[in-house]
Each structure stands twice: as structure tokens, then as C-alpha cells.
Length: 353
Image (cartoon, rainbow, N blue to C red; front, side):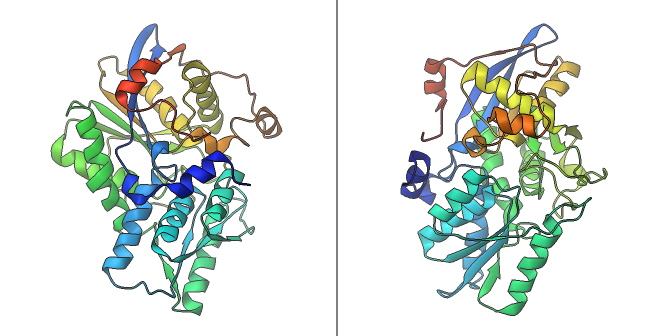
């Protein structure tokens, strides 16, 4: 039997992608309350920012005429893009094969399967680079084996950053009334940062664009190591990110990201995923050093319902060396957004459960 989240996902359509709420919360940092605007991408119909990416990747393949009724779309994914592609493929009548690894959450696996996706698990890993090289190797094997397999290639396809140049960036800029001091964006493939960065450089060059990465990711030249934080970071450099598209990059530990996810949920009722926790922590660090910043946005890629069995599970936290009750010290207090204010701004709770 499907739970309410899965049922709601299967009843939504791609026409509902975008126009996600921008909700204001307040962080007390160095004794002062600082407004922070959360762009809640978990409110997209399949549950994440990657719905936008998936839609543009599919549109690109269709526009180039490479898809046939017999095609099998294939992609290497840690979860959210796989859900987005499964959602779009179900709507358009394509088969979809997701190449995943053991870090993919149970929630995202169930979502993909409920939307008709086929899953193939890659378990081979390297101590320093993790699963990604082997997921990509498997995709390439399939593509070489038969012309039936069509790779969306989120890692190199320009349709990835184009989605955020055309959609995410303009939507945030409009939502802020053109007043945007800084935006904080998590990186993995780099498509989101590249698209938003290119757009804001054109319309708001004074806006500070801050890339947020996970400790253990190699995107900005750090040493690779295994990470529990999914949906952010990578064991390979981005094909999309160039230095002129961002002003600074900040690295966040998974412990700080998880702790802030739980603090925000406890204080406001808003549950966001681990990459959002990393973005919020990076924002808090930045605001501590820049007291003049007032109009800031944290792009929150997905909601916390994807992490009920991990970040928001006390047992999982302890098993993986994290303390469920731990709090980040830089954020002294978090003020909840009132239900009335949230209603005016769009939505406070976006999960269907």
C-alpha cells in the first residue's frame, strides 16, 4: 500500500514544476536576528529542485529527436534526479532505468519504484572516490550495448544549467523583488550554480553568489573521502562551474549540516534535507562575518521527508557517529515562521504526509 507522499506524487503533473514558496525565517547570530529566505524546492511535484533539471533534460532529448517509443532513458543518480526523471518518464510514457548506489535513501528508492522506474544498484566503490565512477561506468556500458539506452547525462548536458538559468534564477530574483544581497547554492554536478550564477551575473552583478560544498568533495580541489551527506558534493570536478560564476565557496561538515536540519525542524516545523542544512550552515557562517547583509536566500533542494530514515532518525544518527541532540553553536536561536506568514508566502509544510 502506498503512503500519502507517494500517492500525492503520482497524482501531480509536470505543469506544477516551479513557483515554489520563498519563506522567511530568522537566525540569531552574534546576538542579532538575521532574516533568511528559504526557497523550498521540496514543494516541486516530485519533491526536489531536480524536477526542474529532469524536465529540461527530457525536453532536450525530445527536441533533438533522439527519443523513440522503445527508448530506455538511463541516468546515474544518488536519488532526487532519479525521482524527477521517473516522474517525467511516467508522464511521457518512457521507460527509465536509474543506476543507484547504497547511499540512495530508502525513501527515494520507493518513490522511483512507485513511479515505474527500474533500479540497478552499483555496490563497487573506491576508498577515496566512492560509487560515482562505477555508476557512470555502468551507464556507459549500457549505452554502448544498445541504441535503446539514451543517457540524459546530467554531468555534461548544457540542458542542466539551462534549466536554472531559465527558471530557478529568475524565480528567485522576482521573489526577492530584485533585492538580493547574497544567495547560497549547494553544488554537485554544478548545473544549478552555473545556471543561477549566469543569470544573476546578467541582471544583478552585485549579488554575492556563494557555492556550498561538502567536506570530502573534490569539486573545489579538496581531497576526496567517503561522505554520509548525499545530494551535495562529488568525487569529480564539475563540467559547468567556472570561477566567474560565483564569489566564494564554503565547505560544510556533514555533522553541522545534519544538526542544523534538526534545529530548523524543531524550531519552525520546516523539514529540509542534508544539502539544505549545509546551505543554511554556510549562510550562518557568512552572515556572522557580514553584518550588513539583509536580503539573502538559501536554495533548499529538497524536503526532510526524504531523510526520515537517516537524518531525522535518532538511531541512524548514533549508528553513524552523530549525536541527535547536538546543535551548531554559530546559530544561537531560530525563530519560527508563523503559520499566518507562511500562508501569505506560499506554504510552510510541503510534504504530503
